[in-house]
Length: 393
Ligand SMILES: [Mn+2]
Image 1: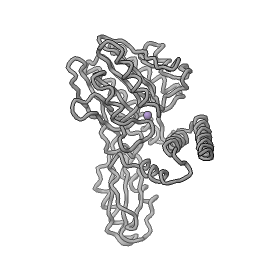
Image 2: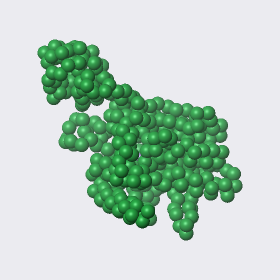
Image 3: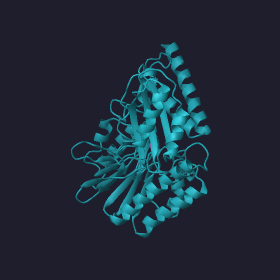
């Protein structure tokens, strides 16, 4: 909640997208009440950012209060978006809601060279929270599994803001082997961070990501998103898919070979689209067979006249490589990773470089100047460190 697209805040598009995230949470609140659940778990990124405007706080409070009024326990951890500086919990809005007794926040801390886990006990379950350990996720899970070994066997549930990314090695995610450590130790692990639904392992899964209830960006169109309802007695689960903002995403191979035949082709094409006036997002790739001028601004204006809330049109010609953009796992990040891996400057520490660059982009996009500078400084230090090591070698 609290996300708003860049551009004028007074536009219909900005206003509706701002509402979308509250509506998505409201649907979950209503579902939790109608399904008569005992507890709602949120594995991080309840909010878009660490600093919240009053309207976001007020509306979040109202929604949490609705669950609270039905005696539904709300258990939440911070994600990277609502993160705080460790040791400075007062920076976290989750502390505010926790102090108001609108949610419970299980957490852990690192002291005297060891991890300490502080669960929330509710009914017959211990709810543990591993927050957002970032690049330390695998190590934190391992320490947590070790800790559970020393405990009497009880019904445990854990929340952690991470995901599985075997073979891809995205920042802030873990290999399957890290999750395997929790097998038979927790009945349910609530994961997050990645925006599409997944579960692990394929048979008898216990690690679940429900997916972000609303699109965070348009790259996510086509992804499955929803909620998971888990029965802690039978260990049965149900995935309930939720609707996101109505959108149309397509690729068109144009037949036209000049601007005037294109105009007719485009006009006919958009007449066939199922646009809900004032609601639909249209994302279109146009593929040309031959080079002729396409006025993309005029195309977008035509879509707006047909009622699209917003449209994005990208133009390609046959010299570009036709690709399948419906695959959620092969994104820009993977392409960049392949590129950077080939660079010599980062030496052996290419992972740190990729992680830092991803963070820099996130912070730049989110206008988080302090964290951008912090990451930039530590990347520089790292590079200097690598050079020194190389000299010693
Ligand atoms: Mn996240």
